[in-house]
Amino acid sequence: MPQRLRVIFAGRVVAETTRGLRVLETHHPPTYYFPPDDVLAGALHAVHGTSFCEWKGRATYFDLRLDGLRSGRAAWCYAAPTRDFAALAGFKAFYPERVEAAFVGNVPVRNQPGSFYGGWVTPNLTGLIKGGPGTEGW
Image (cartoon, rainbow, N blue to C red; front, side, top):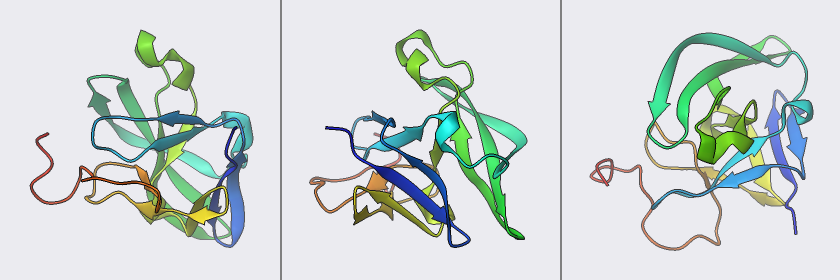
């Protein structure tokens, strides 16, 4: 059953969907990707710089700007992902620590440890999560 995903910034819902894509990687909490139509129009602004994922390809980044507030590099997407991740094309993902709140269903999300990864941590996850000190190399 699809989960309702929400992202709140500046007191407003900036992304909400039941059509999100959930991506799992080794020792990562899930990352959720929102269809472009389910992100508030005009809230995301492309910024310079990219990163490269050996699995998904080149990511581009977006500042979130709304009602005079700004969160730098709050979201990213893969415009032309690798073949195995083609379904992600154009979908947007958000860093939980760079928004006011994020939810899976009615469960609030915590950010994945570290400053690079964008996984959404919920209480139902078990085991060691990549991102904290000493885990970057796995």
